Structure formats: structure tokens, C-alpha cells
Amino acid sequence: MNNPEAVAWTMAAEGSFSIQKVRNSLQPKISINNTKQEFLDKFHTMIGYGSTGTHSWNERNPNWNPIHHWYISSHLDCLRFCAEVYEFMPIKQEQVKLMIEFCSRGVARGHGCQSKAEPRDFEIYEKMKELNKRGKEV
Image (cartoon, rainbow, N blue to C red; front, top):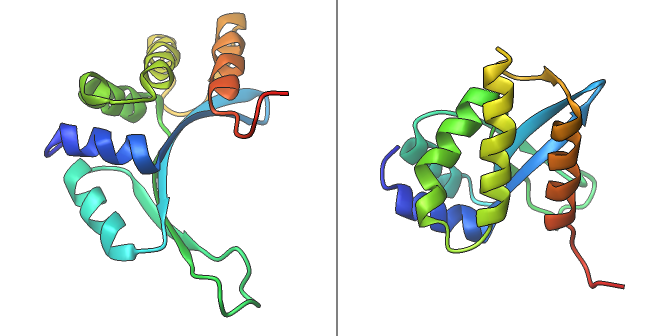
């Protein structure tokens, strides 16, 4: 990864660290979305791995721009990414720390992408969900 400090600040402002339920398992996902393809192309080049794509939220509305995204979702890639940016993260350190623990557990079990979840994995999933919750506290 080129310039992990710049990557960390970009992820702090624009990125997402999450754990998703996929069928009967949990899967890590680190992603960043933006309407500018050039931005994500440069980000992808800085990282050196991951996948990119484009989707449109409402193709019938000409006022909406397509959304471009970069993401990683294997335990090993997410673990590597988090280890490289953790010390530079100005915010979201708790999410990164949880992602490191979650992905380390998956790698230890020999899973590259999806893994059969254990009770601690569900605890991490719930904590991550709470940290990523948007909106006001009620």
C-alpha cells in the first residue's frame, strides 16, 4: 500500500468498515463509495488490491449520478488493510480494531472469505453494527 496515512484519512472521511450476514455466515467488508470514478481509480492504485464497480441507485432519474465503489471482503485482505491503516486512523479506530479481531479469527479457522460464525463473531458483528449506526440516539 502506498501512503497508508492518506488511505486512513480517506477511509475515515469516506469509507466503511462493516460485517455482513451472508446466508449462515458473517463476512467482513471494507468499502468506499464516490460519484467520481477518477477518485476511486486513484484510491485503488494506492491500495494495490480490492475490487471496483459501479451502480446506479435510480436509473430513471437523470439527476442522480452513478455510484462507483471499491471494496475488499476476504478475511485476509481486510486483515492486511486494517493492519496497515490502524495507527493512522483519526477516527473509526474501534471499528478497525473489531475488524482486526474478526478477520484474525476467520484466518485462524482457515477461511478466506466467508466463515462459519462462532458466538464471539456474533458479538463483534453486533458491536460493529452499533458503532456504524446512523441517526440520533433515542
